[in-house]
Amino acid sequence: MTILSYFRCVRKRGRTMVPFVMLFYVAVILMFVQYNFYEVWNTSVASPIRDGHGQDAREIVFFISVCKGEADNRQGGKIASDIDRQLRQTAVLLKSAAALSSSVLRFKVVTDSEDLFHQITNLTSSWPADYQKRILMDYHKVWYPAERKDMRSMFRVCSTERLFIPEMFSDLDAGIYVDTDMLFLRPPEQLWEEFQKFNDVQLAALAPCLFHYDTNRNKLPYYGKTGLNAGVMLLNITRMKSFPEGGWMPALIKVFDRIKKKMKLADQDIINVLFSKYPELMYELGCEWNYRIFQCSKGTNKCPDAATNGISLLHGNALAFVSGEEMKIQAVFEAWERHVMGSSVSTLLTTLQQDLESVSTKHLPSKCARIRRRGGAWEAFTEGGRSVWDTAGSPPRRSVKGASITL
Ligand SMILES: *[C@@H]1O[C@H](CO)[C@@H](O)[C@H](O)[C@H]1NC(C)=O
Ligand SMILES: *[C@@H]1O[C@H](CO)[C@@H](O)[C@H](O)[C@H]1NC(C)=O
Image (cartoon, rainbow, N blue to C red):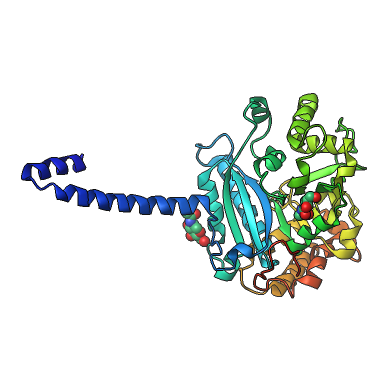
């Protein structure tokens, strides 16, 4: 309206040049806005590295999915607190990864909410610039196969997105999916190095489930002795394109149609059925790369490697980081949550050891505390830290594109 009346007013006065000058300015402003909009949405949001060598820096690629779910517009209550928990957990995941890493870590965030994505990128805003630079984040909208509406409605939003990563990111060679309720106790580079242990045909790596599949709650075929847990998945996307039965997507849709009535753990069940048929394509990760409450809450430590080498990646599933019921695990989460980025990680390790000890001395709720200290599980929480945390967290090291990552 104002522009039109301006035109009329100008024409009345007979000066025809002025509107064109003004239009020129409007166009410049629009171009500026559009350019910035493009910058925000189509490049990495959190402090992208823009120096001359930025493009050559070797990145470790992670996929995470965080969703608000159906009840997007509801206020307060259970859903809001669930989002708060997801954000707290994501903050700790990012912190532990960046603090122990000397590489550039790219997080591909699959989400149903742009707003949530901005909240996630903002989680690193208070970090020192040197640490912020190590985390790049990209926004990706949740995706389901268009012709398969039933898959979308059957699955819980987001948790099943992990199945579609090879399809969504078919231009990438490889990446690692992690649940957001995980935290690193070893540098993420060491997890990426597991790719190099694959033989010529292995195309994915998951850690054993050690619970559920070998019980009578499960009625489905599963991989190996105890099935696989889908909380962390190393995916060689290049190789997954030539998955038997026409590729990964056709194979998983076929399994979905066959077992949808018997599924209990949706995406994880599908993965287990697929790899029970093709076990030779799976590289089994050590249980220390996906240590969960069930591995210490049953009276023994079910993951012997964690007792000797320490836990590498701790998985707080079943709300173990926040429920107040398993304080050994929660203490690790809370120590990371309190950790101020940039301060010494060896101090964090000392604090953590004290916190874990006081779970026992103060008799805080914990089944994992019942395991004997020597060679037991609770020392395992800090064992990984002993050897590596002192040297971790040096500035990102650049290496030639395609070269392997070294610490
Ligand atoms: C971003 O994070 C800071 C704390 O680091 C907080 O004060 C601010 O409210 C956050 N902004 C948004 C939009 O979430
Ligand atoms: C994935 O597999 C391809 C084809 O075998 C290989 O060239 C590539 O190096 C592998 N990627 C990783 C990260 O191991």
